[in-house]
Length: 138
Image (cartoon, rainbow, N blue to C red):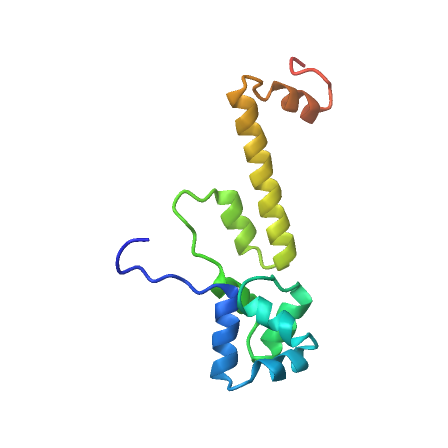
């Protein structure tokens, strides 16, 4: 990180800050959300990632939108980020869990392809399977 650049808060830090700004003790917010105090503590310390349902309940009780809460904690587009990942992150019709799953799948596909290229396997087989013919020459 360059000097003078401000680090974005993590999701847990953002939740803690918003809770403190609302003058809500952790126990009270956990009770309002319907989760245990230790679980909320783990979320605030970034040890656990809340489900969409829990994130929505936290946002509702802190008078925030869950998308705003999630998006504001997400790092800004890093240099060199694939456009696919940026598009996944921008899509308002996907849940947090769906975005995370798609990003993980995309990353895995890229990693496998890179490994195959490095080993000299290329992508011919994938192309053959994709067109359904079983042959890349059709």
